[in-house]
Length: 292
Image (cartoon, rainbow, N blue to C red; front, side, top):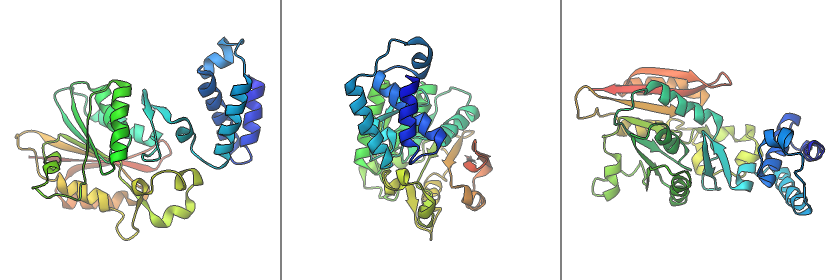
């Protein structure tokens, strides 16, 4: 097996750094054999690499050399203990977003009844991870994309997690619209990983992201990089009706706009604003409170 891993890794190194190529090679083997890396390394010496597996591996390698994300090739990914379907209609869940989930878990240690809204839910990863960690919570995920919501619903079924997923547009606040009730200020936690990459940043992006992941879930105009944050913060700037309760707002952010976002939230009346760095030392999470 190690020889096969080495061969696959060598082919991929024409397009990927050595460490990433080797990691992708292991991932391919795990997917094709249905065995974990530990099993392949130590516990399955009798595992064979059949001609069919060889053929499939070459197809996968070819697609990777065209920079198609491996998660889209396989159609799923493991993230925060969830086996998630991913499609070109949804972003691929990333480690930074897992840090956002963990930040909420750390801040909300009390498992009392909490109402959560995940705005721009995509694959449903944030909503499902929060519900799995806190079964007593009521969690809703919304997205403007019907295709994304269908993927999120399938992920809920796949992982046996009960989350309410709905198609909704945060820029449509018409009270006559029956979907408007989804956006009313009843939530204790509002979380979002909205589009936050400026269009001018495209030139620095890797082709596996730029050419394959959904454009509308990635980019904002250079002229208004806080577009989605502002809209979400404004929608939920009203305090909860029940006195003594507060709303927590949690965002994944573009590292370049933390101070601007903090000032904007403060101007809307949010308090206890904190910015947290990710594992790479970049400003990545902002949180704030709105209390009555």
